[in-house]
Every structure is written in structure tokens, then in C-alpha cells.
Length: 174
Image (cartoon, rainbow, N blue to C red):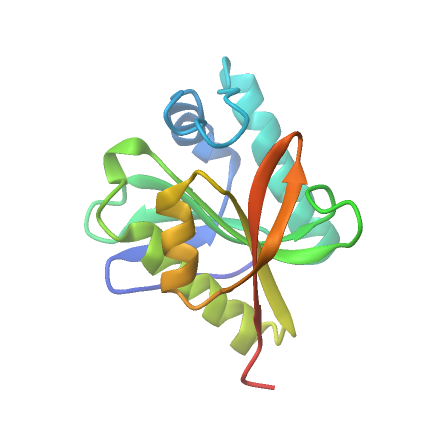
């Protein structure tokens, strides 16, 4: 996949196996996984496997999560972007907007900035008709971001015994 999205402070680019250390540092933090099933990774091999899944998304669907780097330092911040989701909602597949950041980058607006850039890419460049997202009901920060960037609350659903809020947004450019 050949894509590079630049925002004011960030670069979003395809994930590579060289991101394994950054993924591991992020996903081994129990705080990062508080609303993701409370199951942080325990080995860098698990992070490499996650990267393999992203690379498979690129290959199969021409879309997938993108690594986020700070423009000024090149630091790995986390990931954001779109994914063709086939697991979370058993009743249908959809294009999912997501983001995950290393804890030290929380609270600086990076998730919002990256998510907005991902939405714009999905609607303007990929011409997707609709983008959706989900967040655990108790995850106040993620729910606030999804509302802030314009996704519309569209009910709740259960995923692995947890109540999640569901959000959707239609493409206004087509």
C-alpha cells in the first residue's frame, strides 16, 4: 500500500514490521487495553502478529490501519485509520474507523487529528459510502472523540459481553 497522509503535526503511513517495537510498547500497557478486553500483549511476537494482520488487510482489501508518527520527531505515536471489519458486528461487515495511541501521547489531540484525516481519506479518496466506529460505553475519551469528529451515535450493541456504542457517518461528498 502506498499512502502518506500529512496533518498539521502528524504523518500517517503504512504499518511495517519495523513498527513492532512501537506496537509492543503501546499494546503491552494495561492502561491502553483497559477498554480493549483487558488483555495486553506479553511478547513482541504478538505485536508482529498484529502487524501481519494489518498487512493482510492491505493485501486483501487495499485498506488498513496506518502508523502515526509525529512530524517533528518521527516518534511512533500509535495507529489510526480504516479497516474492513468482519468480526465486531456479527450481523454485517463495515468500514471501521479506529485509533490507538501510546499512553504518553494521550490528551494532546493526536487521536482526533489522525481520525479526522482518516475520515477524509476514506470519504474523499476511497469514496466509501459510510464509515462506522464502535467504542465501549464506559470509554469516555473515545466516545468524545467519535462525537467530536462528527460520527453520529446510532445505538448500542454487545461485543464479548460488553456494551458498546455504535457510530456511523455517511459520505457527504458523493
